[in-house]
Image (cartoon, rainbow, N blue to C red; front, side, top):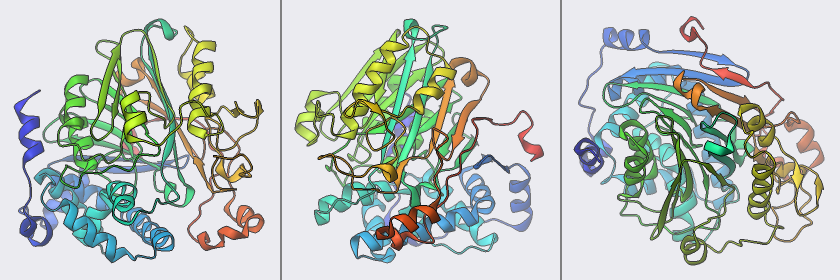
Length: 471
């Protein structure tokens, strides 16, 4: 891999600089006006499309200014839901983030986050750099450091459904990629952000993101290097190495600087801290090759092929990761991850040789439960609906948990070449979710009132617009 990537990865920010010093780039009113003139935002069918460009501080300022209210809402929800589940307030997790990340956050990341802080302040929303750091590293902290430190697993651990296919598996022999995101709905409402980044250095990026996160978080992206990718989180995984580089830095660096699949994988593996242990599904539209990088903490496996498919459903396929680093099952279809793995294989075989973006969108909305052997949306279906699952099946999710798939994204190689993606907000299907009706029926979740969103059914939409700046 290139020296530029290695250098960028290991440049660390000391505690005094990362947490207390002022940014090296001092902005003026004229500079800010010039930065904002190069950025834009438009809202469509539940999504926010955001274009940023330039140096790290400048593009951070653009994002902070144009999405200040959304970032503030993300922080409000994150603080409330985590205190309810852990008993620890926002300051506790902010201080933990400062200790974890102060020696291993690259300078470019720091500058972009400081730019967001400045942009939000200009827009009338006050956050600190330390809070911004926690928001970017919330997955490392809450889903990996916290279970290790306090022996407690949070309820809303992420889960997703995805596939990538190429060669004989697809209708035109080229890559097709599809993914839906599973979070708790309260925090998931902030993942409706499609960010286009044109950095001063590195490759252009188009990614789904969440709040102020400088990487995708939900992980669906394409890059100017011709790389496309997504992931599904490996379930029942709690290992963590606090000495490693946080995932938000590694994943962003890979998108911005990697030129091919091997370089992308190398960036994620190097200085890995175990956070966001994922089955990464990658494709190179220049070659038609696809790959699956399964990344645990001690173990990883990179598989590549030019014909066939890989799927993801939150269960590791690599036996070393599955047996040595998780407590997950491989074949108990009462478990949602296993049920979706089996269902993906059924759908891939059923549609093999015909897979295209139309079929991909249909498959993301699939409601067939392989355990119940019937159509019934719930926690075991590719289009997940925890709010409809009564919890009667042992090994399943808690009863009526308001969580599941609230989006869908699809692309093929031609779309990627033309810098386009299909995206659907509010669910991969058209069932929708009404928060008030849900809380009236399931009052045990009354504590989420004011934080739980509506997810009305919305259409599949192509982003970005042909003339996006006009919005």
